[in-house]
Image (cartoon, one colour):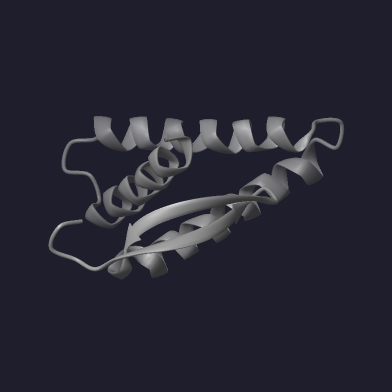
Length: 97
């Protein structure tokens, strides 16, 4: 973040706010990723009505972790997928830090 302008944003994931310090140029990708994560959590909530939001968030996280693991194992993997998964990984690192 030394060369780029950083900014503070707050994102909502599964209804909870998470403050992030990001590169300004990363904001559109992060917003798309947050939207995708929330949509995946919502799909899990609809499919598993007996599970709470935390369980659905954990299942969404697990699906992304599996996708990232599979992508890293592929020789000559798709650069767009790698970029997307790296963005998800960075977002998760930021949220969990």
